[in-house]
Length: 495
Ligand code: TXE
Image (tube, rainbow, N blue to C red; front, side, top):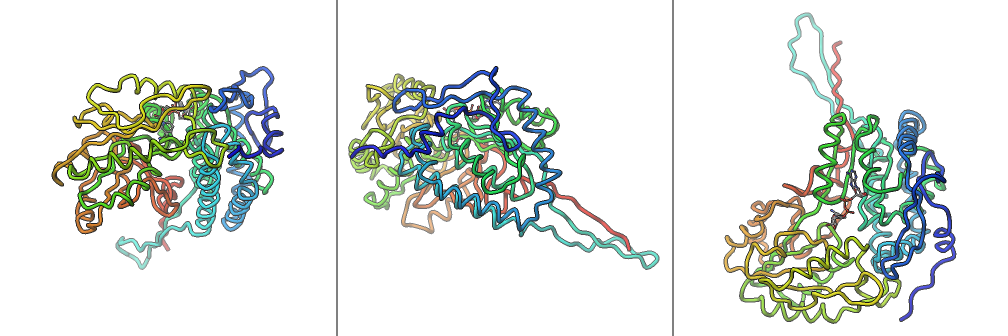
């Protein structure tokens, strides 16, 4: 099948001077450094994005501060919900354009870009829109003694924190930005987003849409560039919260910098080494398609994807054969080809990282399939399935964030629980079984922010998501996001 034809609007957008979006205007500083945006399929530059200068970062925070106290504060909760729903409508209206930008910029399959990244961005925004009118406090009757007939009452208010810095990684640049933007705007905060230097394009198009739908200037801003821009935001005295998604080392640095700056609030959604556990009774004909989807969608570049699979010893040979065969038959190629199932890695730095893992293969692992680069142009590697014999194998302990999955057999449930928890991380884990009673008994013993049964990686706006242990701090989605983006104020009244 041939590639989808690029929309005229995509071609026009890529040719524009691109840069930070501050107070409702795209501002390109002629003197500033420029980042070439590389298409990972062709290794060619597809756009030029001007990096934010330090003065522009300050201007973006100042614009967000003004909107927080002004136009956005004057927008009623109901109206905020209306605007978020309008933005969801605009995302759907411009869905193909956003999906094509994503496929070009991050190497995401056009099917995944359309059906997951773009479609879910609208779903999440509508969820946040629904919350705007439902953020409440509680009323309390204090127990203070009444000496002369006086009485007391108290209530709590949930007040928006202020300007939020949303720092976004390269793997789902549109959807993760929407999580942060939706949470901030729904609670009455304003936001300055910083996309990854590798994949800023879909977010730069999205902010244009925020203006089109009538979100006031300054409520949503974007500053472009590398980590130092994120660092300046994190350390900025007028930023009240940092919502960060990315790697563990950068997350720890961001958390420390935010605390040092002004005890700035942080939510850190970091990586992991997520396990899947396949119990002896599983139906592998059902599980294999599930694992294929969850571990290899977007070439495995998803923070919650499983990278280590513990399989009951009685089933591991059958799983190796079936999953290995399914992986070997995946069609690898251009993400703009609708028949392709597996595209390139998102950027050269990540490709080099995965290649370095391939170079360490063979010392203790059996390669069931994959383990090589594809060759030719583009950051293509083979989907890879390994089998280890040692629980401390590096492919069972280090996050590759790529399409590399490692199997290990287990014999008993007790051994399985130990294996699942034998990691500094705790983002997501899954149990695959028809024995629900056994799964329910295991769930409390698994050290993880999220546990799935007979599924993995699925996220829903109504279900809180975040890591335990070294996988992060705080939760996104559900009602949990309200706590994370507001301050609780208590009011006591004597009358
Ligand atoms: O991530 P970083 P990178 C993992 C994955 C990948 C590795 C590195 O293993 O190979 O991280 O990717 C900004 N202060 N994940 O380098 O460094 C940066 O510009 C403030 C997992 O892209 O964590 C980008 O916008 N911000 C992950 C964002 O932080 C800083 C998804 C993430 O960058 C900064 C992506 C600083 N000092 C990669 N330094 C997941 N959990 O989903 C960088 N940034």
